[in-house]
Length: 437
Image 1 (cartoon, rainbow, N blue to C red):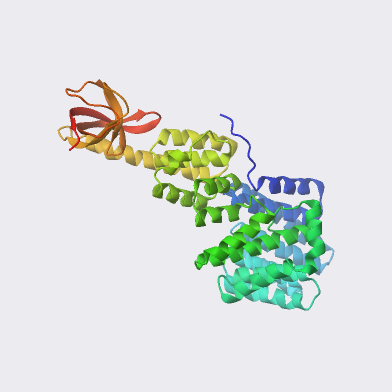
Image 2 (cartoon, helix red, strand yellow):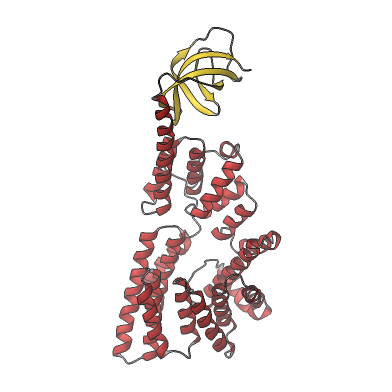
């Protein structure tokens, strides 16, 4: 089965960054390209592919450090060292990242950009106090300069380091107001003319930086409102993000989280079908709305549809079908950690289901009674008993007048686990069928 190709939101950025790497060979283009691809891969839960990109970024920064040192260009050396620190942090080498950052700052303590890179690396290392201190230095230096876009970028780094504090909220509000103010009218016109919408963690150029920092500031402000229960203001901010980019995966996932519905989840899964947090929210939605799994089914039109279908199949106990669905997607995305996680979870659920009833089936003399509804008949062969699918080894005629699709009292023994319409089901030996009491 070939999946319809509805574009995942990050596909365009991945293509653009790959083109940048292939067409521009300067240090910043090469480095930012690999860092951005790495971050996009992380968002898609493709860890091995992300690490490969971060390793390339580290090699580029290391080579630049060597070249700059030989040329005795200390400013260039400090910048390359800061980027090497960031790449090391993204690769999980905290000690090396910290040492590199400390070295870089010995040569560039008067640079707002260097302090901002230091803060970003400290945030990556989960050291918010150091990140906030460095970001304050960047903001202080930038406040004396005449570049409001750079100032907004550094304010965002500070707001991120400060978490959910009132100061963080005020900084984010200031950033959004500033970027939407008349002083940025010319830049907004450039954005409109170029029809730009791509979001990058390491933006290159004023247009990309403007779009990216406005998007991220609004998303962080929205999440701050959401976390404190101010859902109306959160919705407004998420809607602002979606008005600029209709397929933003973070905003769409938030809208599905705030206002859960099959339609909202479909849009979110189409934007990023590999978000584990989105998957957990959808699982909660399915458990709270029993009819949702059936209502949401249809011929898959996208990778997101396929992942949702697998989750619906898991919810219905159709474990072999769920394995087949995820395996189909995995052929297109063989390095995706989310798909591997889902396959593991499906197998665990299937094994637990099988073990529970195989253990009971060992009690050959034990009988059970439950409310059964047959799919068709007479003769009767399959249906559900107390909500669990079952079938008999062969069609059975019972004495008496009974009909399908109505509740009946079935007494039975459990023979084991079997397959019914592609899903695991109980294999039962019928003993007696009576009208429901």
